[in-house]
Amino acid sequence: MSEKEYLIFLDVDARKRHYHQSKGDKIVKLMVQLEVKVEGEWKEVVRYDCAHDSVHKDSYDRAGRRKKMSLFLTYEDALTFADDDITENWELYRAKYLKGEFP
Image 1: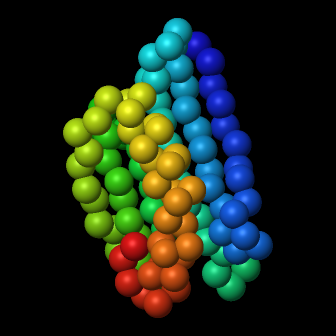
Image 2: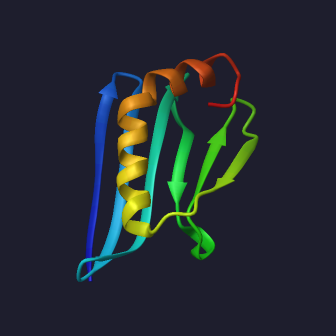
């Protein structure tokens, strides 16, 4: 089994956390998350993962409330989708989060 985990800084106050575990060429665990630094603390804004054996996206507002959206994707497709979505939309997600909205 192989694991990969890394942080990519998108700006001084925004970063992408990427983790996945694979067995052969199959993804068996994944988590890709956008984090924004607010008042010196890193806060989760958008997270894709496969907890409870189902792929989903969690979005958070500044009050810590969560919206969950199920995604009907394979783990491999979900990992690619999550990574691309955060890379392409992090500025929009950060702006909405900082306004107190759900991204």
